[in-house]
Every structure is written in C-alpha cells, then in structure tokens.
Length: 437
Image (cartoon, rainbow, N blue to C red; front, top):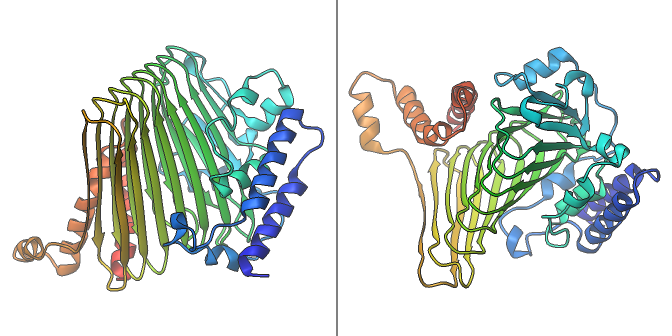
C-alpha cells in the first residue's frame, strides 16, 4: 500500500470515528454520502489532469493521527490573530468552536455567527437546507473528506438589508502534531445585505499538520460579500481549501486569498454567477519560498447574461518553490454581454523557482468581452539600476520592487485598515523569501 493510500485510509478512519450517532438524521446521511464519495475516489494523484503539477507526497509523509482537543488561550489567540485582532472575533481550534474566546453570536443589525455544532444540536435552523448545497462531493475528494469529518464550523448569516459595519474575523487554529483539521464555513447573505468576513488560518505550536477547509457562500440578490482568506500556518503545513460561491441577481462578491506560508497549499475556487447583473472579483497573492508548492485552481461560471468578473492572481516565488495557476472562465450559451478578465502575473526571484500557469476561456456566446493573460518574469534590471543609482543597496532595491509588485493586491482589500494591518506581515514574508533566494 502506497503512502497516499495509507493516508487516505487513516483519514477515512478518523472521519468515521468522529461521527456521532446522536446527530440529526440528515447530518448522518450527509456524512455517509461523503464517506462513500471519498472512499470511491481516494486521494488524487498527478495522473489526473487537475493535479498533474501538484503531488500530494507531503501529505503522505505526515504521520496523521486522530485529532485531539487543542488548547487555545486568550494570549495565544491575540498573538496568532495579530495584527487583525478585532472586536467581532470567533475562535476555532482543530476545527471546533472555542466559545469562551469568541464574541457573542448576535452581531449589530441582526447578523449572526454561530457554531455549526450548536445549530446541529438546536435543530431549529435552516442549516440542513444550506450546508453542502454548492459542493460537488464526487468532483472534489477533499471536500468529500471535509463533509465526512464534519462536526463543527462557522455559520455566518446576514439578514435582509443588513450592513455589518466591522469585519467579522474567523480564526482557525491548526493544532499541528500531524493532526488533520477540517474547518467548515457557511456564509449566507440575504438580499441587500453586506459584510466583510476574514478567514484566518494560523498554527498552534511549531509542528506541521493537515488543514482541509471548505467554505460555501450564498450571495443573495443585491447583496455584497467580501471574503478575505489568510493562509499563514506553519511552514511545513499541508493546506487544502475549497471555496464555492453562488451569486444571485445584482450581487457583488469579492475574494482576496493571501497564501503566505505552507509546504503544500492547494486552493480550489468555484464561482457561479446565476443572476443577471452579478459581479465577481477574485484576487490572490502567493508568497512562496524553499521547496513549497502553491496551487490555485479557479472556475468562474457565467451562467446568465449581463454578468462580469475580474481575476487577478499574483505570485512571488523564491528558492525552489513552485507556483501553479489554472483559471477557467466559462461563458454559457445565452450568457450575452458577459465581461470577464483574468490575469496571472508572476515574479520569480529564486534560481530554482518554477511557475506553471494555464488561464482558460470557454465561450459559447457571441456578444461578449473576455480577456486573459499570464506573465512570468524577474525583476526589471532597468528599475534596479535606477534605484541603485540613487544610493540604495541591491538588497533594498530588490525588496522595494518586490513589495511594489505585491502591493496591488493588498490595496484592493476591502474595508479600512485591512491593507495597513497586513502590510507588515506580507512584507516580512517577502523579505524572508528574498533573503533565502
């Protein structure tokens, strides 16, 4: 039996052990369906087109064991969540809510952030009708594993017409120690509502582990959802994430994925524009060094007419890191007046760094405006000479140009203070990668 087959067996066994026979029948059925889907598919290999550039060998190398209770104190939380420690903060350790360190579920204007486990126990919410609605378990084996292991997570609800003034900060702390954590997030924004959600993945201690995150977002008619995803776990962490979004008429969704650390990071993002007038903005920034692999797969589905989307994914790769981007834009028959753009610029600062990029357009309508492009290059020698001629050291000149390249993504972050709060954290990552290249 290969290392990956052994890992899959252990993960499936842990999922079965986590199941609670006292949970609602619909949840038990959902877990059972997910276990069957994962058992049938197993962990993907590089023989599959969607995974041809990304080997899961680092996951197979982890001595995965059963999850244990992770202790998270107030001081730990403040240190981990810095500099974004906010008033509306909700803490999760090992995928389970830590209510004593979290804000009250009720937020200004009627918005709420509840523990999924609490909603399962209550039985009165509509979470059964919402959860798992947008994720294809057969197409995404890691999403199936997440559902098979589902015990807790975050459920964010924005009532009709409500505007949440402050960002809502979800901190998911991985226990490490070779354990698997399966964070789950459900965001429902009713018609006319608006919110900013920060999904912050951090590590407890200095041991690697496995994080397998699934997020579902439903953006109602005229609603606005801004999702900021920070991946800044242990440098040897394996992190797999799946984000699925459905947008209704005249809705606005933006995602901002900052992948700053990890040995293997894989992000799958699917966005369905199901209502006319919907707009999706997808941004990403990867800062990778050493021998890490960062893989981003996006799919934007223009299912109806008069929708627009814009993607900007940037990569800074040092050492012998590898970056992968596969962006797919689908314009369905009848989706006239579609406006879609896709861009993947990459800056290579390491002699052994490598980028595989494949932006794609699939257009089945004739009255559209679509563009896509990708670049891979090094720092501009003329710009370096210009800065050196003004008495800057070569190291300082390179740092300034690299930071300027990444700044565009930071400046597009929503709300006030987020870009300023994260500027130093991103700058430190850039300096670390630059110094090792």
